[in-house]
Image (cartoon, rainbow, N blue to C red):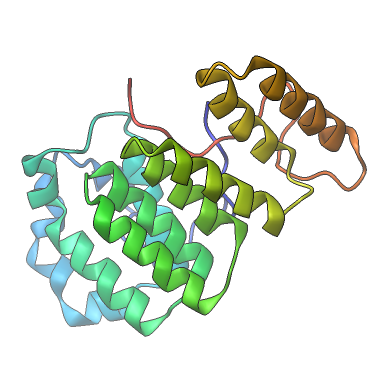
Length: 210
């Protein structure tokens, strides 16, 4: 399942994928190596929100991005992330960019960017992204810890209960998983519940194919 991330709706016009040719964001095409992409004037016009939106769009292609070919194609993009995050550090946008780094197998860089985001502001999304990266690395303890921190930051977010329920069920903790699902559904029906969508169709962060 996929989580609809905060800020993933309206496109910022100052993003690499905005405007004509937006479909050029395929990670299998080395369009980011075009000279204009690394031009200081172009990178200087990018916003953190716009680059975060465009980074998520790359992950929407549904293919495995963890390959040397893709990393080489996106090397200018990674440089742009570094420049924009230095110039306009915004925690939620940095967390969204960290998702692309994880998809491309740059897990250390993804976790480091989450740490930088935390130094600016503690937000639920950063913990969710960090949880996804730890899960990618196979560290279930760190994954669960990150989801629990996310829930402390946003206790009304029913979808986080389902994330923790997934982990409990995968570990064979079915009573705990059932309890977490029940708590999540109760939160979803609450007037103060958050998490987006309906309990029957939770929005989750993008996951790797397979």
